[in-house]
Length: 451
Image 1 (cartoon, rainbow, N blue to C red):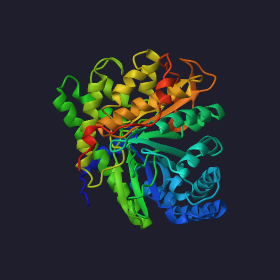
Image 2 (image 1 turned 60 degrees about the vertical axis):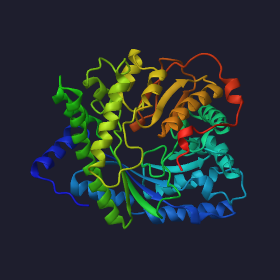
Image 3 (image 1 turned 135 degrees about the vertical axis):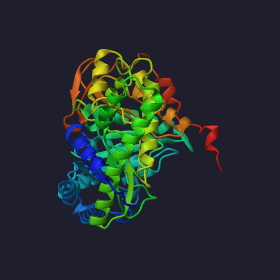
Image 4 (image 1 turned 45 degrees about the horizontal axis):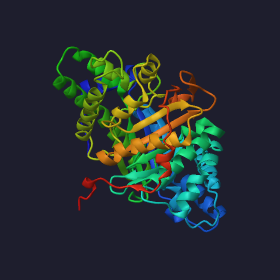
């Protein structure tokens, strides 16, 4: 698919890049590692390292060339790999931390920002390898710099694996006790997708090609700028404006993805058109909602505004690319969005409201700091609530919680870079321990029976 741009569109795109924070947030190469399986951990690690370095050796250089030639910023260059619980299933060792170290070294060798796929798919039950990987997460994430991990604990087809939910509460708690930063690289999913280019939840699904290029675009600042011209207009005009803007943003992502694919000799996968905010002022999803007429993000009306935004982004994006995938919507990570941080600090945005907002957007309770003494059972209960939203609504939801060790409500925890900083948010008092201890599976909803 090719596109012809007129001079007006080119000038608009240049303005978006220069003044409205438009960028390609990530070009992510997915790499299949199933052929790296081995009974010996050392041999498996060597195969994994060699294949990543061989497959991604030109990724960063090619992206930098595209940046220079097209004038389009590509903020992150990343790699996602086959879930390591599958790759390491033949290994005889119980501790998968050496594989995390291998991913970290390979990522450093090829010069990427993050590598995802220290992952397990446990939405219906555990394999021995799933348990080994999950139990390795605290060490793996606190002993490495750029390795990201995810665990899928629920799906609309299978229901919610409450044993996995309970275990992940303990794993997050254990990770935070070593280093809260490790929790910023860990996502717990319901209905995880196989072609997500965004971290920390990216992994290369088993239905994907041997190697693939997926692109994640951004553009909250561009959408906010466009909506400022719609003051007083009806929601019909607002929706149409967002659609047209999302179309332009996605076309840019399509162009970059096709170029990267051609230069690397790797198939082009999808454009994930999620609006991904940054801590920078003017690059905020919360600001978009406030431009629609809300005094502050989090007040009554926020969920409706976000629903409109998410829907319009999808409708505009699918017209611009034949291959839209990943998560594709509007992210609402607290620490990565200056407007969200302001709303939390101002008292209008709480955990319950964020949970309600996740019913209508991508992807879930993201980059949220909670008090350092939050129990594992409470963390598991929050995961269960979010998984229920995903399972019943047949959508991807996720939880990325950071128990801020030594900090209380109102204090901040800083992560740096795109991860930003998060104010510690209050949680409900009361114990969910008895609920979480039941274990088993919450059955899939009736509408999962679609065959």
